[in-house]
Length: 498
Image (cartoon, rainbow, N blue to C red; front, side):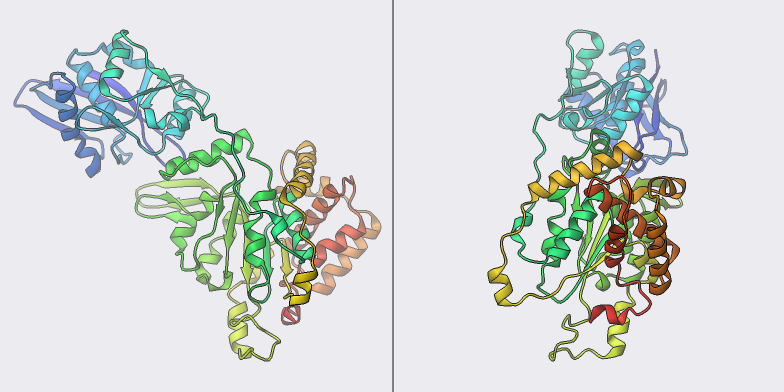
């Protein structure tokens, strides 16, 4: 047979569209053409495949070879198609049985020796391959990641091993999940002395998945508190682990077994935060999916970079549109920010020399719509030497994590998601208030000038406080505490810093 069809998978965000590799051998002067929108790395596979076949002791056909990567309007990039092209040439030239190819899909880059090299995006390819009912053949280095999918993934180290499988002479090994138990690598909350309100807010934020902003003078522990949030979060569920692994796989980064914690520098560009580029790649908000995105010195970020976080904070995903492709990445992250009360950080102290205009410009870097989406805004006050010396060691992260996990379990049993994701009818159903609580909340909203979005976020935080207390209904005490966690979006913002 001079025509063969093999299957591969492209990489498009966290999805893996099917690519059909059609190989045709025709009479004429020897030539090797690849069509179907191949980029430079794909076109260069001609030389890699030729050398790999020869060095693996196969015959390279001295004929006119045409390889079509369908669909033709999907851009193809990288070396992931090398293996499928090589198998297609062998099948078209009769060196491997073509009838066996229908049940397989192939991804992998070929070395000149015929060895297989790792490629990115193996997990999305394994998930899509399992849905199609085929076996995925991938490089051995991709095995632990691809094994997270439910389908059958075969791993190999060389082209010769795969050909032995197709001939039925030897069987390829099955990909096996990593047996290492995920461990939480995070500093302990016990290191923080004092700051009881901030520690309480951190626990509430962890229990309900709420966004959080710490503000206060330098050196008060804002960054320490934020960096210890992953240590009190519950471990990833199986579904969450696969989602996170798929994002990191598409970015070509090592698999994450624990909740991500991303802390980009304040010089990060909007593209670095949300993703993009000529070839779309996930940004920091997608790499923080199911985890924490920490923005230290938040007003120092470009305002445009902060404003583009608003839609992902609401929708839990980001859509990147480019002329060549449209990609959707998950971005269900927990935002934690830290900021000073003024550019120098010492507002109200004799050493502060910031002018009112400088203070206004600094604070206005955080717009009202963005602050609306931050559920809790907590002041972290300075502590003197006596307070630091007399303060007892803080409660360890393990004890706090137990309460957080119990509260999240209540939320999952009640509504199937954390409180921060409640919307519309769900919010009305699960955040029922009595007459006393309604009156308190209505008066507070009118007095403080809170928006409708802030009103709903107060309700969500109050619902989390009730879950931590293991109460079915929300009390007025919890409404008052939830209101106390919102300061920066009040009408008189300036007074909240003093």
